[in-house]
Every structure is written in structure tokens, then in C-alpha cells.
Image (cartoon, rainbow, N blue to C red):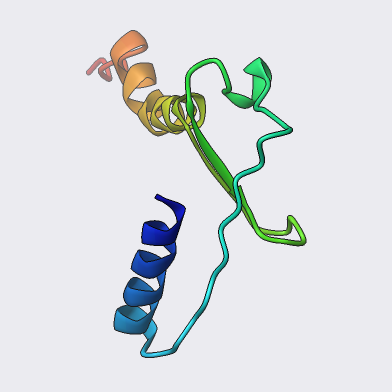
Length: 86
């Protein structure tokens, strides 16, 4: 599956940027995600070689993102604005 992902990346980057990008994906089979990193729920975390770019796509990170995006709506439901008294 890694080779298919590499090919798809090259195709997408060529289509979006009109540049030829290459990538080499590796599976780290010695270090596993810990529960606080979202490892108990599943998903994947991608790192660049120098670890300056991180793409966290675990179920926990996705749920945290949804929660943060819904906070304004949750606040409005729990604490509706009071109507001005005339």
C-alpha cells in the first residue's frame, strides 16, 4: 500500500502544482503510538524526515478538531443570549 500512496502523491502534486515531487514512505515498526497520541483509537501520524512537518490523522485528533469547531455552537445552546428588556 505504501507504493500506491507514493504514486498517488506524485500524481496529486503534479496535478495541483504542475511540479514533479517524489516521496519515499517508510513504515516504522519499532515505535508505536501511545494512548495519549491517539494510538488506542487508530489512525496514522506522518512526519517529514526532519520532523518539522507533522500530519496527525488519528481518530483522536479528528475528534478533537470537531470538538473545537463545535464549541461556539455548544456555547450558544448551553448559554443562549438574553433578550434585551424594553
